[in-house]
Image (cartoon, rainbow, N blue to C red; front, side, top):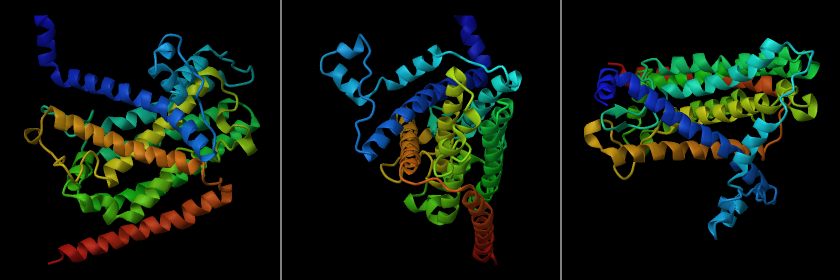
Length: 368
């Protein structure tokens, strides 16, 4: 026991990093699973249906009152979906490029997990910052990792050796690269206001009250970032890479079993990562302008304040996730020329103009 404690003391930073990684994954993976359930329930509500309400576990389903209630909510549906993905036949067609075919789902999923490493999901618990890696260039790391996600979709389309997945892969590469430019330009005014690339400093800048949140100072940047996030995650009205009515299923047409589930998990993980980034950049992160929940130093709050900050951050993320889901079932899909026109001829010029206007305002504000 003494040797274990000595190891923890000598390698405290490493041990705490591993603990935070496990904690983030323990929250992220259930969020991915229950985001699917939330989507199915919200779509059912919008279409005046019931949604999943028949999945019951043999033991838990028989618990008086609670068991039938959870069954009607469909609370066990994600577990059933996960078991189905594991138990289905993992079929690999003979004509695919097998090495790339197996590699693509992992490349599509991993960047979303890596993005979460630099997002501050709370203030402090004790003296420990609630962020896995507190990088001074966190936003540059984020965009660098996000840009890798496109390779998974392109590889999936190429590896399938079939025309519909190939078209889906080409569409995804063009769409994601196009909207990454607008997304990157939309955050530049944020860092012009904050004067720092560290995401923790961005949250501290917004901890002065409700109207210190950057969404009120940069509503155009927030709107561009949000719409670009829809395009980056291939969600309606920008789901042209999948586009079931045109391309069967797009880049994942030939996939089954857990390889298909990895693409599915990657999409929802990217939605969560995008929502977390919008909360951090525009919505005050883990701060709340009421109840004194704006602690920025370990001396200002204890264990419960730290846990409250994490809860506030997750609540804001869930609100944005519900918007992602709601939009899917309320808006029709764009044509591909409309999608490209919006990205290149609308958003990029508007984002550039927003940078110039912000620079001029800051110059006039600080000019002697």
